[in-house]
Image 1 (cartoon, rainbow, N blue to C red):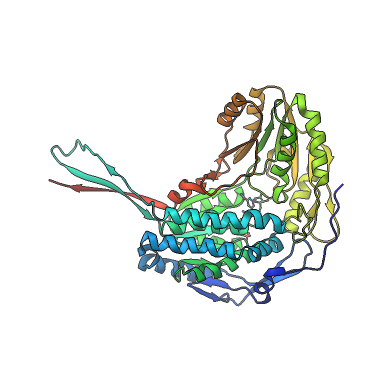
Image 2: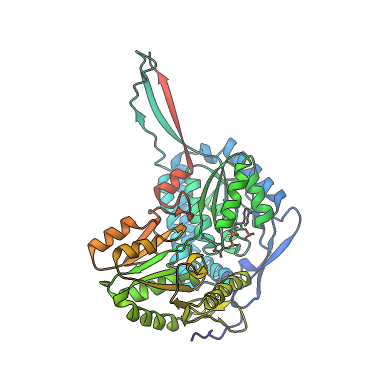
Length: 505
Ligand code: NDP
């Protein structure tokens, strides 16, 4: 049974300076109020207390931001800078993120609920690393010389080559689970390295860290109009960005429902390019030869890390029948050890989920699991009067038709099934409309490589989980998305390839 640690009075720590004023939009290099003059509040999910007032952008602000980004792209200087000049600025952004890591991690923890220790060890350094990594890519926008033999033009000689170019204005729409890492690191860094300009609409649930980032980007020397950030509602700011004819591409991370809606809008509009990183229902497989001392805490971390609010969370555990009882008992102990509390407390392992809406969604899934006859092994309850704390929850005796097995919950809820053969494990792992992540726990090389090959997922973790390096591509098979974030693939996804034929005779 989990208890919420006593919640101290809200402590703004190193974020108090930033939070002492109304947070404005960032358009064309200036911090400005919303055209409507409207503001909204962002709150602390651990206590419900207000953190700050934020300018609420809408269609008028998005239009202004797109004009600025268009101008900055078409007229320069960003797209016309040398790769080395862009590289230096991006590298500097990475450095400034590290220099201000405590403040950024505090903002992330206050706004999202996650433990400060997690934001400080993961979200912030990973974001900086993506800027350092993508800065190098600014120097690698290479084409190729292609030997051609155009049979329709007998006797002609050609010098043919490809050019890799920036796409133009990129509209980014991002969620609340890794507010800075996804918006700045996974999306912006690669887009900027290629020479594009940006209009970002972050989730209005967690706008703080990305608005502090805007100050750092300005300090690093990003020219006016290259980065524009407009917090606002999905319906309004988000749809205006998606519909906009002067936007050349949308990079989206969030729910399947919104991803689908963006595709409809784009299909009816200028057919701008789209990458989507949507949800998952990722299998985590424990074979009978696994080292259970590593597998059990590893599986617990795979689902309970970041309150389960991870798109690739290992939310469906498949366990070999021979070790099923031992694993279930071990996981119950792991879950019950987890200390819930405010993200700013040193002793907290797991913070609150992000919002009342998310709490309601998770609790309705937990209730549906109970109603559908699954066995609640541990957890299952909201904890405390204040904030949005939910116990780490494990269900056993589930079947493939249950909602908790089929649908993404995006919270600290694990469902456990058993299997007897490798073939059965593969069939169960792939029995989902998603394909984002997967985990394998085994000491056998044969099992490792057979499973890694057979599972339809964009990332497979073997004897580990939730490893996120800047250089590896991340994205989904099936309904988990289109395209990849991070790595060379993400950089290339922010470029166009042009073929050039020069006739030599
Ligand atoms: P959404 O997909 O609704 O939100 C993601 C982003 O899209 C937000 O910035 C949102 O703005 C914006 N948005 C919403 N509607 C539109 C629209 N029609 N056009 C353009 N932009 C839009 O996710 P939620 O925050 O509502 O979370 C719901 C579920 O989505 C979660 O429970 C989880 O299952 C999944 N999810 C998956 C994530 C992932 O990493 N793959 C991340 C977050 C959520 P606004 O906040 O104003 O609505």
